[in-house]
Length: 100
Image (cartoon, rainbow, N blue to C red):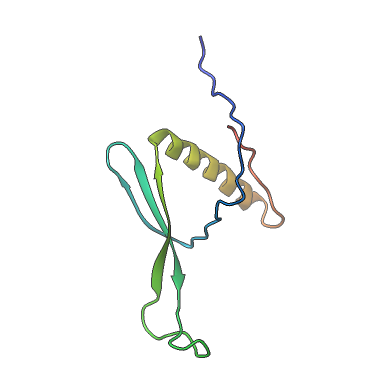
């Protein structure tokens, strides 16, 4: 008997925040889960009406993901598909179909 992935219905809860990241801070594997920490670089001014502060920018953690290895593999495959499509089409938007 062949194994097939069960199709699941997605319950898209609007209360879940969308998170932006422009930096990958770290990844690790503890033997059970793959942990991914994402962040965003911010140049914070000393005063709200002033220019950005001099020196090193700060990277603020915006998200921490803990993924099962199989979910990490699915994420890698999905991201590769999206990046391949993005390379082929620089304008417009596209969205990968979800394979629940």
